[in-house]
Image (cartoon, rainbow over all chains, first blue to last red; front, side):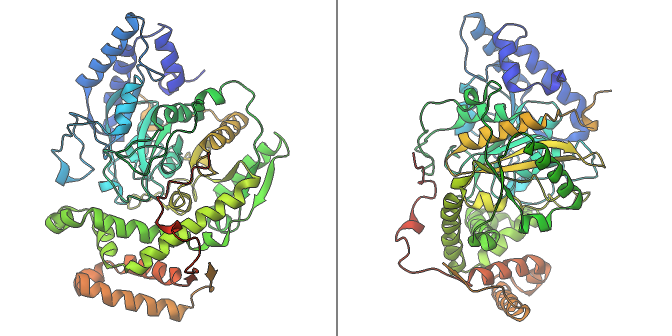
Length: 457
Length: 73
């Protein structure tokens, strides 16, 4: 039996719809759990107690009238603090925006609320979603980094505060903290989800993603958030009406063809993570003859360089005016990144953009024989180093190519830190990726538990 | 796209020094000295990217298209 605080959004929404529990009960318990544990965890930047209870009351009132607000009716959620929330402080993790209270919800927040979700508040982000260490603790061991930049969102979900929390990814800011904290982290294909109302890091790389407790919850959230938004020209129209979550329901998810990425990835993976990955692969093999080795295209060799250059140049432009006025208020890592971006030549930026498109084309062509790629969820368990948010190397190639990715927890290290795998999907075929991820989740049958710092005495 | 192989240590050092000169102009010597590691990383990335050769006529317009506009369905 899953611990109540680790119940999925799918289960919570069903329990509320069926009248077994009220939204006010669910939200009150979530807020109590946060109050009891967040002094040591520090996953939350701002909590909206009154607003959350008011939203929960509205959800209960709607149900009493026989109305269901949507698939997330009454489900408590967290929102990364670079994503606008109407009437609730949104600080970007920066003193410059300490008193910033947006008038409007970001598109993703409006969609969550429209689907019945209750926004508890804002989760801690690394300053401007870049690379400076957060104040958030890894609830598995506070001597280890929680990862970033969506640190608070990953920790909030891991700690049983809420079953869904929004993050954003420019290199590895969803998948990496998800891996370090033992939760599911999903980044859809670039262009699936609107970024209106999200403070940018890099316009051509940023993607809204989310942490959940299950793959089905990740799919359910995509059902709610996907869609064209004229205010974000990068978004595309939804591909048909099929529900991602409904496609994963039941026990008969088809055995996927998975490509194992080796080579460069294998060489940089820690020994313990490699051994775990080998175990997972061997275990999955028992599910059918589905696995093949996957050779990455030549364009992969320079794709991290392209990601670095694109991000730095766009960061410098995003922050140009603000940085000129307030550079002393920037954290060291953010400041360095802006400055590096200012010094990069235009020719490098163009070359980087050309390479990413070449890499995306190469991946589209080479992935036709597999449903998804599988690789370790991170270089190793979360490092015992609080001066870093960890290595983005396992995520930036896919983010730079705009490909969908999902991290799934699959075990615990000798030191008690989460281990997991990452799956990479074909561009704009998030359904195929989610089905493959659900299959892996079902096969591995890893049952997440509450981390030590999230236990209430 | 053609790829002309790995950078030699000498080429990498030359690239870092060249990039560093630009950084000193933009940021000053003191600040540049404080961020040497980031400068070396960025210089390496620029140098490695410059080893790629794309055909001028390869997929005209492809590079300027909206990056998301590739949904095949």
